[in-house]
Amino acid sequence: LNTELAAIEGLCQTMDSLNRWFAYAFLAVGIPGNVLSLLAVRTFPPSTGTCLVQILSVANGCLLATQSTFVLLTGWVNTTSAYCQAKTFLTLFTSYFSAWTLVLIIAERYLRLRSLSHNGTSCFTVKRAKIASLLLGTTALLMAAPSAWLTGPSQDTCLGLGRNGRFWTFVEVTLFSVAPSFLLLVLIFLYVVARAQKNQGTWGAAADRDGTAGDKDESEDGVTRMTLPMAVLFPILTLPVVVVILSFYFCYEAITAEDEGYAWFKLIHAVCVHLSQCINAVNILIYVLFSSRFRSGVRDVFRRCCCGRGSR
Image (cartoon, rainbow, N blue to C red; front, side, top):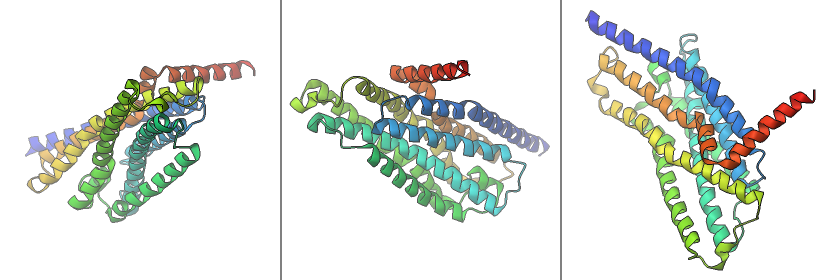
């Protein structure tokens, strides 16, 4: 018994340390990276794609700041009902908004490609992109509210385990990962097919009218190169946390809070949650690797900062 208790205590300490290290890493790397992404994309010519990528950077930064802050507050505040409800609401809202903004971006990429190839003009405008983001944020608020309202005061609910029963767990997992991942894969497939058709010239003469020339075309291509790899990585990085949460509920009745298996579940769950958040923290690395236009934007940002300091 003492050996099992010692093992459970060791696993809990490992989980706490892991949570804090990831929280510090996200605060130190993820948030500055998203701020730099926002500033670099602002150097692009205004378009629906650049507008949505800027919104995604803000959403990712808010998600990392919210979740990291709550992790660092663990042990310093009482896990009251109001605290757990606030944590659940903010965590789910930022997660939903970030995930579905990425879906909106890929949908915009596909619709833009089709409309430009068929009509020579884009069906999306910056105003429509902002309205779509506003509606998406409102929907994310409404989706997060029921789970937050039902959340009770306990350490496990604040960890995201044992929260509100199996039904709401399936709802949260579906809204956070399963549905966005499915739509992203479908949209990526449609985009690849549409791109292949355009390159083969099967869409006729309208396929040659690909928007404005010059820097704007380069920027639009850069937005596509930045966001498509993120869309591919999203299902890969969020799938583990879905598997862990669902398997936890299938095995929920077979383990107890004092069981070593439960401690292992919490540790694995924490690892998978942080893995799913990496897509929001390393997006700047993806942008730099895949988009030369973004690299130029980053250089412009640093050049302006250096020139600004030198002029003072």
